[in-house]
Image (cartoon, rainbow, N blue to C red; front, side):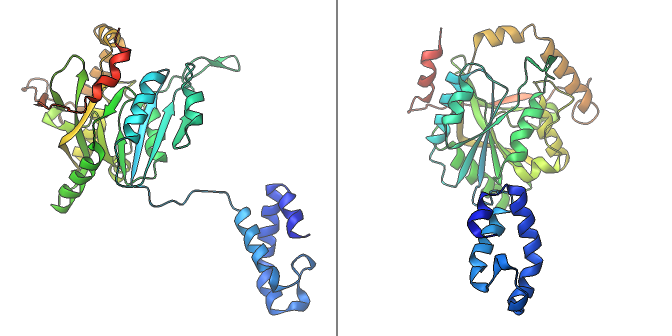
Length: 328
């Protein structure tokens, strides 16, 4: 059995050869007379090392990645392309990766994603049938956890596929993490200011139950996500899971802070806004949210501490103009 022939064999045979040779090789080196004919002399050690690497599954060991950008999407290719480009254009100063979790899009999104060599695409079909059976519908938390758990970065940037990052947002988020961490504060997330374009004039962050700040769009410490057991996949369908995630962090003494200067434009779909006014899913998730945190951060008969903190900011780069071709 020579090196060339081994390369042509199925992976399992190569792997078996590697494991059997691994224990024999030290003896062969010490006792040339016992050497296997296929590895007749120490000069073939370099070939053996190549086989050793081939016999192992290829797993990326890139430890340089600092930020993982996680975006969920389904059938919104025009918006998704703009969101991705805003990440690419953000001049992020550290190595980063982009992870898109697609729910089985049929509008050309998947074909486009496959062509993007800087994007890791996770496909989890969430609609239709397979082998004559309806597919199980998955929650927002389930989809986001696919990205969160796959991420290699120390920090995870979470934005929606209908969002645009304003210039330097990610670098400012990183600065805020470093600043707060150096001050000795246990930090779990950084909330970026956003607005619903074109309806809102001001950007804002939101305080949820108990007056606790949460991340609509912004950055998480991956370690904190793992500490709170990721996003809830069962309790919520689509809404409120982001607030719930941050409340779990607050409960473990992780703080969420805002980041003045880091801004996001969120495309405000008027049709979606109308649907939310009569949305059974929103009602279900809101009730589940209040029930989950009642007696902890929510007290039915006490003053509601939920609020917005707004900032008036002029974006001289007019980032939101990229949405103009979507207005109808």
